[in-house]
Image 1 (cartoon, one colour):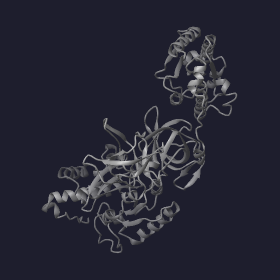
Image 2 (cartoon, helix red, strand yellow):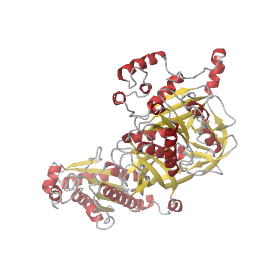
Image 3 (spheres, rainbow, N blue to C red):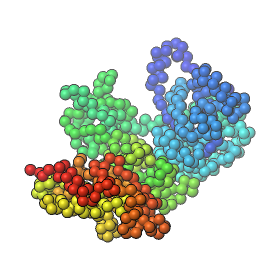
Image 4 (tube, helix red, strand yellow):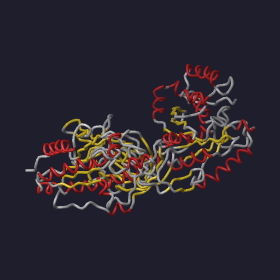
Length: 639
């Protein structure tokens, strides 16, 4: 085994304060190790930690003990155990989750992410790569370029990592053969060029033996390049590129400690700023001038990318969390329709048309994803047709947001181009994405201001607009009760309109079927129509199964607070089947009718409906009377 060469700076013994100050101002490099299973990723990181003296004595003793018990290297130290911390990882000898480790040398500080090699944990690999400046792609010298080598290389390039290190590992197991090394590098170069990787640095190493990891190895006299550590210490970090780009600062917080101070706090993502600079707040487009740059240590004459600061402006303009402060004469775009590349990270497949929360920087908006234009087979680089995205799938699709999103293409800015999708019901992160560009049609469509307002329409009708959203299983009695409610409201002189599920499918939604995606689009369209009708001052009643909570909540979000009333017609499935006026349950049970709610398609019961009707205990007439009383009591005529 090659002895590590690592010399501690003499300054640490001479002047500890000077040493700490030097250490504080070292640059930071974030990198990942990735590749196929058993290529030696965890072992390499363990070697780096060991050789950089980042292991305490008790940790070293525990490592030596664990190596004898569960190690894979006989009586020798198993460096992989320094990183594989989960019990399942140690039992199986694989990496499952992303493990982050910190170490430093005399020249630079490092954060390394050990990414899993198994295909089923691709989503974890994407998480680690999303913040990395460099990727070390390991290849077992005995096996050569494998499927996961290609997959991880493609993902690294997709996620904007331009510094690639090809570490041909386990050279000690092929007798340090230069011919084998050259063969692997040539094969990888052919693949890399096909996916757009223009350059990479190839090193012959042994993570276990330490060859060319921290120092040149005598076992590879034919290799004259740097060791891995030497390369990591000198490769340019992304901060230099960020500094050269125009000024951008997503606002994280409006700092208002008292009546005399109002500042906007955030982390500068690119460029630099100084007092007197003209800036623009997006998406509003309002302009002002920076008056102060405030920090805990005092005001600054200039701030740059990577610094967290508070800016004060010369003018009292509207600016809040999620807005972006940028150079006035070079701002980013704002749009609400995009082409994006998505990596799906949830066990449940993407449902096109469903609304998700989209988080980009400090911005959070509601977004829907349309059916993918294509998915990428990362093994062959083929573009394949698909209706959805399954777990770990990578595809390109259109994303539509409910309001303008301040962005830059991911290729220009990770901060303003990378986003995640969050399920509105479970709050689980279901996807990660990269914005490619805004769609031109989004830039040509503008909201037209109208003189006769929503409030004026309602005042003319002497009522407050509202949506009574009747939901329940087929046969629960939604249409019957909704019809009775409308008759009673009409008799009271109210202006109403009833949207019934079956009736709407004869016209507006006649092109839709009954798959989950079609049901979601059905409700989205109905929600938009209901909103337009409330803009006209109407009380709108809808009778739809609307099986998914997310879509019902989407319609709620379209309306002002208090105007959406969810009426749950709570009829047990057994009772609904007994009624089965249309014979639909019978057909569904026999397999003649697919995707029928309650049989082979789910119904998600409302958790907190405004009104609940138990049709086994209350007659339709009594229920309608109670709902009308609620309506009249909740919405008094406009005076």
